[in-house]
Length: 333
Image (cartoon, rainbow, N blue to C red; front, side, top):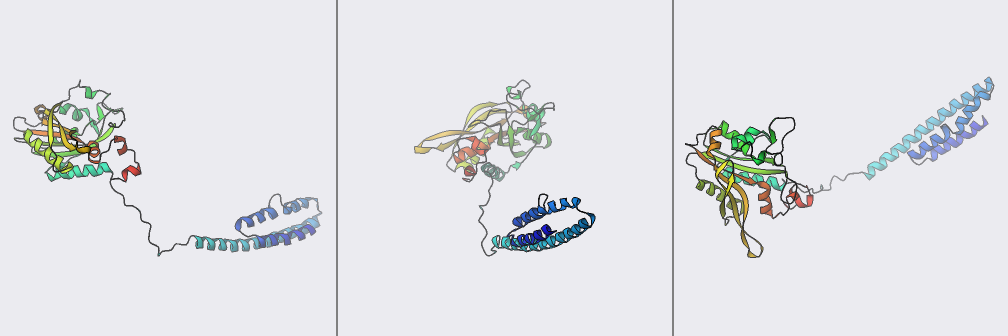
């Protein structure tokens, strides 16, 4: 008991001296923990006579009661002080102006796509969309692409596992076929969207890229209408002084077909031509496959790579910059 009488004042003094909640918890462990003096006193009770054990038990209960009361009071005091200090350190000055966060903006490809669509809708074209996972019928058959055409091989086209003849569309032309099979002429649509090819990634190629394709089907449509439409687009997109030229080419779904170049002025006064798209008159066989009378109607179609236009417009030399989400690059546009 004399040991307990000596322990209590030291414990209460240590509680009063604790400067923070961590120090107070150390006092609790030191004086009432498993290896404390109090634990040793409790362990000695088994050696005492019953009368002495009873008296010591009462002393222990009284000690615990006074210790806990002093501990709780100091804990409340220190907790209040800690909260006041935290509130002072984290005080908000509501009179300060907010931080200026730079406004976000669309990705450069989105900007270019929206501008292209604005140009074509201004000419009277409607916007059409379709699925990116497409059946071979719409992606190939209705577009006059024969079963043995190289474009249908897995080295060029990504096929969807578990589905018969379902591919990730290689162009947005399947939407043109969907429109022609469901709408009667006159038809004037542009089709934006992602397309997929089994290409390796390098500075000029990507397995995922975007297109805007156009289709116009009506009576008496000629190559002159196609050239006039593309010239108007080139001048609206690249400048009023631009010229275009059409070079003979081949596409399974257009006949005749052409690659289209746009004029440019390079550094040092150099002049030249840059290819921007493929185009042509819709093949009569495609019209027939889609249920349109080729004797009465004709049409033209074109396909423009959005990445290609963005790279030409902003002088981007590596297509990978458009997909790497580098904030320093994106902040330029």
